[in-house]
Figure 1 (tube, helix red, strand yellow):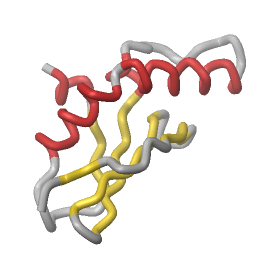
Figure 2 (figure 1 turned 30 degrees about the vertical axis):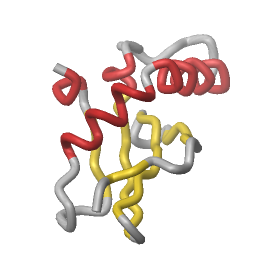
Figure 3 (figure 1 turned 90 degrees about the vertical axis):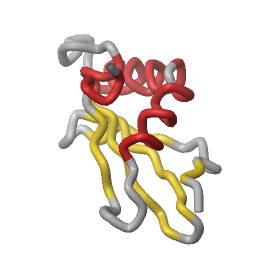
Length: 91
């Protein structure tokens, strides 16, 4: 089965400093985390937690197609239930 992204939801995970989104391989759910550095936001923002989160989620939305393509390339069926995408995944 092919990895798909039917749910456009995403959230910011402060602990991982990454945006989380979900992919589906058939009935299996796979979590993906995109480090903020991969979004082009190279340092923690100082404007405040809420403002930084909005900026990270907006950057994710703007790059959604390329992020999903990188997730498809990184994904290996049946291997793991979570993947972290770093700047290296977008080179």
